Length: 125
Image (cartoon, rainbow, N blue to C red; front, side, top):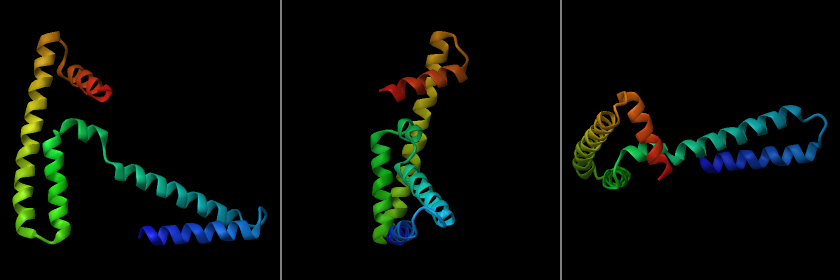
């Protein structure tokens, strides 16, 4: 898929340069749409920073290992790692909820505001 996009991008660039500025508006627009699509896809592939802040390093590592096992076709290991991932995510979210509640009671804020403040402080770290 990536090589197809690269080939298409290269051919559109070639046609645009070959035709010059006039008469190639349609090609230029298609080229611009493709470039924007590639940028959006790259941004999505980076992953969500918010998700990374919610989960511990160990959980993220389990998720990576599960993906590697799935890619290798080892379905028994994938199943076992998926169970461990689900449990680790549950624990991480439980810890986060406890931290938000503790912050809210400590500062006498609403849970929503405490959650927002906690998220902002983690983003800065």
